[in-house]
Image 1 (cartoon, rainbow, N blue to C red):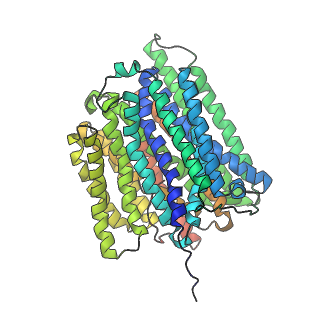
Image 2: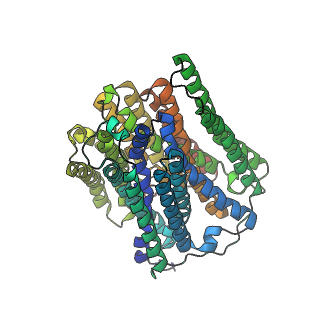
Image 3: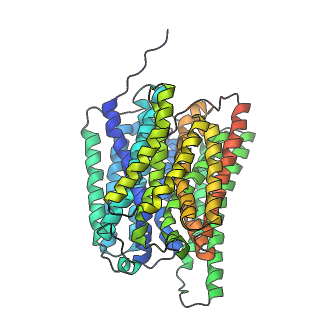
Length: 552
């Protein structure tokens, strides 16, 4: 006799998905904030990318702190606090970050603003660690992915309107303004923006705390110590600091009036250390897995090759997703891409992040109990409706959307890919990764509208990768599943390393050709999809079990 299914707590779920909105809203808004700060503070492309560096590094540090507590204390801190209180504490911590941003703006300090963003994202790290397993626990475990997908859809809504709201807050209107005018704008607009954001964080925390519908989600379970895994991560963290210190110190030397050869040599020097940071992550994880294979004691989930490959995949996926969007504003300034001012890039940035929404809404269809024929119809209709919404939002904001009308061709290609992939994670991952490679190569080999469409379609490609990577990486981990999930969230660090690498490469070879970084990232993701399929097959795991595709 089958066990009765656990009913979904829709009241708690409705409250929970609000935090997914904040993650998308702030992260996507950075794509507009970056070019604003670049012109206001007179930064180079790498320095402007430090916004993403501060933001996504915080995810790594936050997850590392939580893991360290469990590794030494034998207790899961999030489980001890409960999912509910963990989210409340995370929201309040993010509110402190918003307050720090306001103080930094008053002091006209870019470094202080980076610290503020770091604190905001540190709160996000705690929220995300709690929110995703919390969503799964609010109903039948078999439909847990669908609840995460709902959060992903709300997250995508945040990514779609975030750039528009931030642009309105920074530029005062949706009308285009010159880069020179941006440099003369008052930072008081940033104060208003983060005052509003801080109030929202506090309001959401209060909503969670006082809601009687939201359960505590406490789990007083003893965690298995994984001291070797912790030591490895701490060593990697130390080496990452070593790699970034020379880069930051190099900016103490003013090379504004230096000969071109000297400036080029300095850019190459900085890029060398940034690539070193990337190698620290790659080599560190590979060594950890090889060591764990010899003796699994105290290595925890790092003994599983699918997790190690998945950690690198999350690192690369988040990195390429952020890098494409964050460097888009600078790309569109180029003459061969339309010579758009920073404010004119907003609709394109919205369309990029909106492309993630298109894919995630389409992927979420599988979460509902519908007939196959209805699902097939919706897989065609939903992405076109989502595309129409994006066009409508921008048109209402008085942007000229005619240059983006034919982007629907890229959406139709994605629709075809959904039909072919059939919601199977390995197949979906491989197909969309290959499409990503093709799109980036087309973008690198062309200019103008074709290239813009190609780079924008990176959002369509990335839209469904998070759940695919997650499901393939934690498959077969058993008692290590929770720790493995935390390790994957830790690798959101990629959003703090890969964009600066592309930014520095852009300072050397130009912003257009720097998108070779994105092509390389998609190549690894294709490798991951191919390799993990074989690894899981050897472990007797059904790697093509159907999952509904959603978003991070």
